[in-house]
Image 1: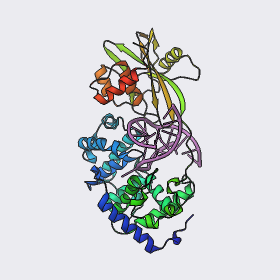
Image 2: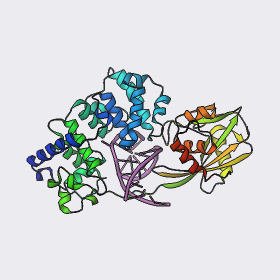
Image 3: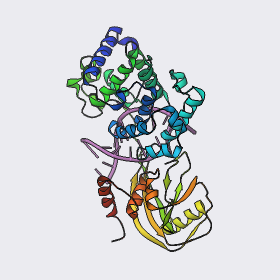
Image 4: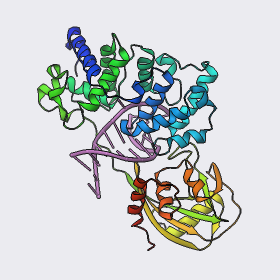
Length: 384
DNA sequence: AAAACGTGGGA
DNA sequence: TTCCCAAGTTT
């Protein structure tokens, strides 16, 4: 473990200067780098959590187009915020953003807090985002540590310890804190991340064009790509689920998942998760009884779709029910609506539901790209 | 403190 | 196919 004193102030200062001038020349032209608005920067940082830049860009543009100010976000319906988040994943971010916007309007006179301490109190803002907003939007000498920074710093220091442990992480924050002191802290933090994203990449780092290659201990050791050390992830557990299109007078039944938990707040077709070795149709009937107090009539199997979450592998069996008995009583369901297929397709919904509606042919105005995906998915359909 | 929490791209 | 992982946060 390198102690901070092993690297001289002069060396730190050189690395800092070289990174900053490299950033000035080679930084990518990203939408959130065109603004100084703390609100816009906050939105971008929230969207960028565990999410690629290329994925975020269109969502960022749409979001700020629709909600240009914190007041407008605070006044919005949560469902509209979810709607702009559909397909981006980690939906608690949308919920927390909405909640934090209301806190900012009600308790901070509509101005984003400009200190890490106060930013950290807002929902959805952890140590990384607080450091990012404080340094980038408010020019504070606050460090930040994300996956890029972990990789760049551990390679630079040739530090081969498990980076998932608290002591190692704490030390990385101290290094980041030492490095960020000086002019343009926001740009420096972005430079560190930019280097990790475009040069000091997880695989095949481009050391030959790296502005700090000469002082990089990992490169001197010869195998920087083997750093950082991190534990292997457990593979996603497989589960089976059921979903059913129940139609009445040309409209289908949609239910909304409770806030919190997987796909919290998202709309979906009624259904649920099967128990191990449970008969599929029996499981569907059980789920509909437990969640809505409904007894389904004849079931028609329409096929199945598969969906991979970060921690679960889902096989979802899709049905149509031709009739049901009982009056709807919701259990563990936030809301329900009878909707035309077109309206249902517009709801905030997760990947499995999008695939299920595509399989059923209930999606409206599909893009050519997603239509291709749907057709590929439909090959697994039981129907001709 | 480990696990939950989405999605899509690349090797 | 499978695995990794991408500007993390919450419980």
